[in-house]
Image (cartoon, rainbow, N blue to C red; front, side, top):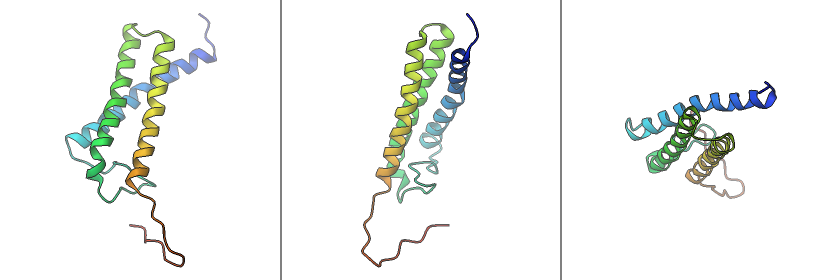
Length: 125
């Protein structure tokens, strides 16, 4: 096996799974057990009006994403998952998690139409 760019990228992807799984599982832990809703459904860094309403959804998204990535890490280290399988699982999970977070944040911050000449609401400091 010769070292090339493809192998380097595979190693980068695999090594990146460790902090990704840690971060996502830590976010789920904070939401479920510590009741910390500071990172729930953020849009432009601002939480929704009622973050507790959207906390279970964010917790499930992070728990599923972190669990699948942890399974991929275990599968690669144990030699259970072939390359095509673990790279597809990892990539698909990362994309689905990002899209689910984006959709939830947009759902938590509904689009409000303003009448012509009406001022925009002041941003919270």
